[in-house]
Length: 345
Image 1 (cartoon, rainbow, N blue to C red):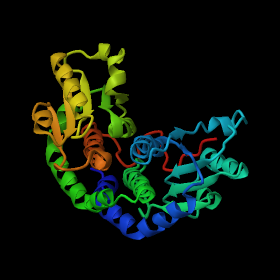
Image 2 (image 1 turned 120 degrees about the vertical axis):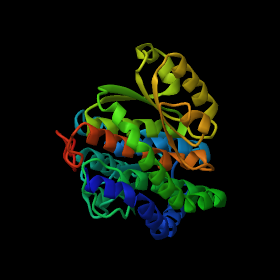
Image 3 (image 1 turned 120 degrees about the horizontal axis):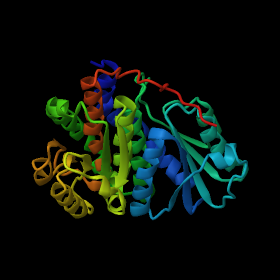
Image 4 (image 1 turned 135 degrees about the horizontal axis):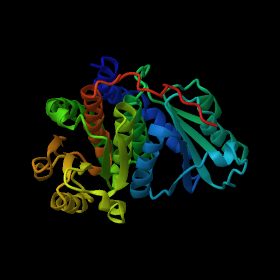
């Protein structure tokens, strides 16, 4: 049984609380300084950090009316054809701050006179040194190869920046109330996880989310791949209907993220369709009709606003992936073929 990964998963409520306490005033100051200097944001990231960027697309688009584009680092490092930028905020997200291609995007943006910011667990890293502004994640050392606490901290940092830019006191209060919700979510998920053993022989699955939790689908699918070697593919529920749904046969594993919010009606209809196709449904939701109707249902506490739900919804996914790896007899802390710091060029 993993000691490192489970420890880091359990640290997340405390880390989120510490991040809010330590950095909100700093982030508000950054927001004040960059206000009016950009019309859109470009985010450069890889892996888990790229999934955080997907969350930012919905978050800033909805609450700040700021378009968010995802960078293509290979244009900078391989093709040597970086896009011409104007009136942009360029954000780099990297837990280690060491990936050369992400650093290259920030450095090029500065050469073009754009405002740059980074979110990293290593503020003294090459990425931290390259950016105009740095938001440190305060996660401590993340020893497990599979990132958990740096992901939820990255989501929280993005949420804090969005709140600061909009001066939204209601959302600020909702974020402040989140750490106890995360503790409750972890506790409930660990109790549910005893039934994960039934999936120890699966070789493939899909992970479905939409809206804010499109990012959650990608992150859970990544954790399943990293830890279990199961081929897990993330989809929007809308995209899944455009062809991939044909792969669903009786017993086909479908992980579904369906919390309350604007997308709940869509996800409820998707769940109904999966039942009709006799899929094996693993759900994450605060709605009993979803979790109790699933083959394996992970409950999150009621009342979590949709915009912040990805921070809670990913936790059962992390624990499910970890438990599935254990059931398969795999090395949880050191998955085959992976290293903690990945440098891409």
